[in-house]
Length: 165
Image 1: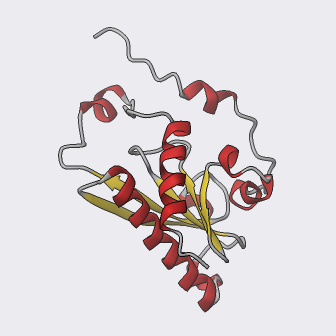
Image 2 (image 1 turned 120 degrees about the horizontal axis):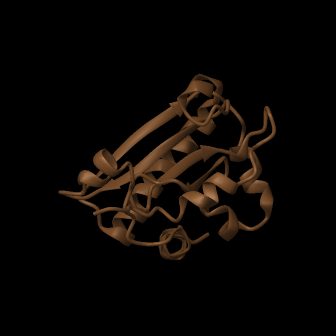
């Protein structure tokens, strides 16, 4: 193969960069349009958002609404809510895309990702045999569904799983 195409990268390359000190994780919920922000669920103190540059299809981030760089900066209610949001995200993914397993992990602090002082948790669905040569040799990830289509799929499941008040 002579060429590998990753058309989605141009969106990343051309995207306006956050002003110094800006934090997209606190500005996303303020957009007022969850579909544009790719927020699939909001709880009282945190939210679930599709990762714009996912490792696997359906890769979610659980993010507290209040800016913090470490778990110790969250109060007990925020920590509990964030953990509940992680569990809810896992259940949404289980129902929507039926993974065989999950990778869960936290980014804590500026150097942990994106040079932005923040914290968030990754919820990455995994399937048996989902690793292939593309990320290693081609430095390209192959995603079988667009972010917009995945958003619609996960948001619909999140709404259906939301406890009725």
